[in-house]
Length: 284
Image 1 (cartoon, one colour):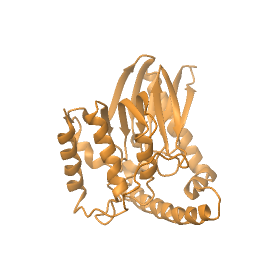
Image 2 (cartoon, rainbow, N blue to C red):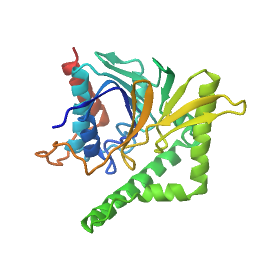
Image 3 (cartoon, rainbow, N blue to C red):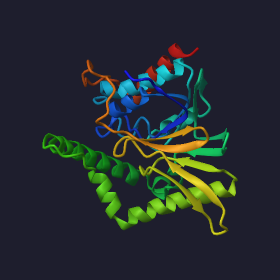
């Protein structure tokens, strides 16, 4: 196994563990390749909306185990809640060892202050019609399932992966406008509050770019993307942010002996208790 890359901060979001579309194996490969001082889980890590006691495979639990392994090796882990794991918001401030749950986070970096949050606070559908948003989430999950089947045949024919949901979103003008409004709103609020960086997830659109307001004031907007369509993360080292894109063809030797066997948890509460027990066991 190759040596792990040492980085200051790694940010991942929108993993959606517990759904068919989650690229958990790719994420495990990535987590095993890095040694961050700080790991920020920027929302929608476990998809409680779509959670089913019948589907939480071994590779999904392996993601949790990789994170607890990082904790036991000294990595500080912040879990920032999102809309799909909003149940955890009642645990805001929960702290055990190097693990902490928050709804938002501000860090003073050597190159400037950074504001981290998931981003669903800007989503009016979430605020006023949550049932519509949840219905859309189920439709999105079905599309991802279809996409998984399409990609299986595509790879068998020697072609690369395609993202049906990404093609749909990229072709719909309303979605493009929503993404632009989301980014500009996040940037405007960050500028007003004097932040140099604003880091979000939620919209599954990885990005690093400078955004200016009407007065010419600028902020660096960053989005960690997701581990459903894009398999991306943000990394911070030596005062600079970079966007990591996972190459599924470059695999570390893991999960070789593991089977994709469902773990029959009775509820997401029991899953959370199991995660906390792991954290408690590994904490120093």
